[in-house]
Length: 477
Ligand SMILES: Cc1cc2nc3c(=O)[nH]c(=O)nc-3n(C[C@H](O)[C@H](O)[C@H](O)COP(=O)(O)OP(=O)(O)OC[C@H]3O[C@@H](n4cnc5c(N)ncnc54)[C@H](O)[C@@H]3O)c2cc1C
Image (cartoon, rainbow, N blue to C red; front, side, top):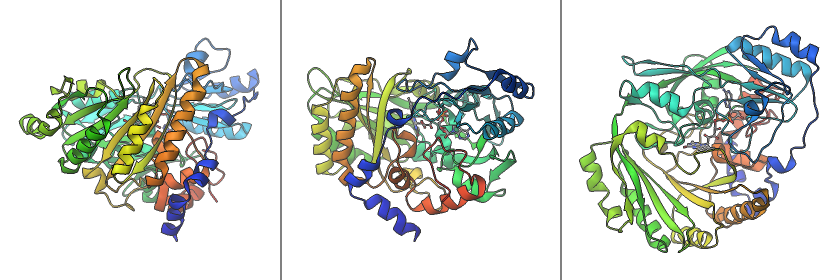
């Protein structure tokens, strides 16, 4: 039954899935909900953290999120100091019957960390990371960013899989799965989660781990922010110091050959090798850039890279470098900007896929990209039912994205992204929830695949009234 449902979602005709897809920023109406000053004062008296109302001088900075396509004005932002603040804020928002958003790093592609007219549980002030080097474990408050976790662990020559952008929040990243440079060797970020502390919508503080609320622990490893507000995450760390990392940038105009070589390279690569292909428009034609991170013996890494270097990159910055430096090099976007991104999971880079991607890039507007992220090694060896995260089959997450500064450019960018998504849809076998700048029920079902039915049961148990709905939402029905 479970499999049937998921297969039904995945096998829908592309047009059905896509017709149902919608962008929240097109539909979310500005909401005029206001909370009166006396109500806010009474609530604030019980909050140890910082309560930010629209009149506050830091309201503008507090409401800003990474994706500038969203200009959302909550009635109240509660920068929590501890889990009691989180519980009180959850209670307050439900009592006021207003929308509720949960913000950690503020990097949701779809602006889910902020809301119009509602209350925001803001974890950004809770960002302490404590490392037990002996046990190789990090305990991180949920507002910590990728760079906070990386920096704390690297003091001891340790690391775990975290995102490719230093300012992404580890909470949103891990709850949705969490892809990063170390995933081939150590699995997704969620595979390295040992336990989490949560506050559920009824204010209960719960530990989720293999031994404590194991159903919840299963669900939060891939099922997103649907089940409670996470206040702390405990991660397994691994020895990682220097890595062989950098970029190979190829001259314009050879995309099909380069992508074929990339696919051959990926098929043969060991777990330690992480390579992704970024395809970008250029005056002289689309170009391919391969971002490398090899976390094994650098001499062997250099040997392994020979086939990619034999393709005559115009620039080659791959060298032995501290892991933190490799992490701070970042990926597609480094600073907040208005953008639209979506993705598809493709099991293969077949000739037809490569032709489609190459054609897409030949008509790409200036600031649009396709990023091909191989999912191989440890991340794809975890059995599908072990966690809620479903991208366990070897393959490629293909992100299609575009940015704009002038709102007038938006339509062209969004149209290009959607058109390419439609063209690749026939080859797809799912989507990655964390990299979706759009949502719809079919997309959510496709994102959680065969695990969707179990996620619904767990949602019914922990959030039966769907208080936590600003997410890739699993409806409790
Ligand atoms: C520039 C950029 C680079 C990225 N790079 C990567 C990458 O390398 N790998 C990858 O896998 N993903 C990547 N992502 C996607 C990223 O993982 C998701 O957008 C993720 O949700 C961001 O988490 P956040 O805490 O920063 O976001 P927020 O906007 O703060 O939160 C997003 C959502 O996560 C949930 N959430 C967040 N915190 C909590 C919490 N404490 N408790 C309960 N629910 C919570 C909520 O549903 C919230 O709406 C990237 C995104 C961007 C914008």
